[in-house]
Length: 224
Ligand SMILES: *Cc1c(COP(=O)(O)O)cnc(C)c1O
Image 1 (cartoon, rainbow, N blue to C red):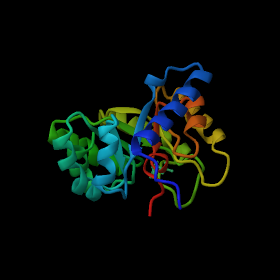
Image 2 (spheres, rainbow, N blue to C red):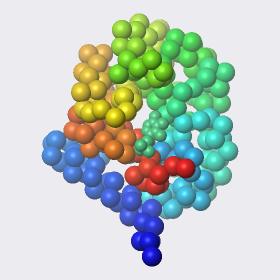
Image 3 (tube, rainbow, N blue to C red):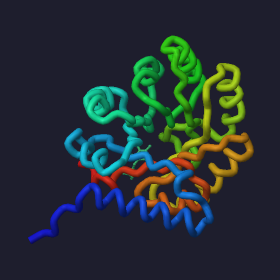
């Protein structure tokens, strides 16, 4: 007989305890760190128990999937914040600005323009992280480190509310140096937010300054 599946509330409590431990040993306050529960690919039936256990900040990586899942959940459970953590096409900027409360994947000039226009039109300011291609990976989203100063300058001209930097380090190698680098880049540019750390490495990210950790499988189980 296999072990019973863990309860969502227990998984949430375990992640929160690990966050608190990492915060304590790095002399930080855990309530300065936002847990973004990444619910991509998981149906609303899997999400609802986490909401009932008290989780209020969720993340999705696709506009269309979020549009299909979240209006009903939000209607039933007020006070939820929804974050976009996946690549955003400029032609989806209007929808994204109406649906999400934070965007972690601002990574190019065309998107600066599209988001500025969409926020203007919607009369709604959505805080953004600029995603940095921290490992200089060919196929990965994010702005090249060399292009970051110019991109940030464009966000200031467009008056976009940029609150920090975000990264996804290369798979399969020690992430700590990349978290430290993102922390340094954010400091250099006077930005308070650092969106970094996922299920396998969020404690390391917290010890290196993460303000937002994006945790999926440790809360929901493995994705299909
Ligand atoms: C899927 C995803 C996560 C969560 O990954 P887990 O390893 O399941 O915790 C975090 N950030 C981004 C950008 C993602 O796409």
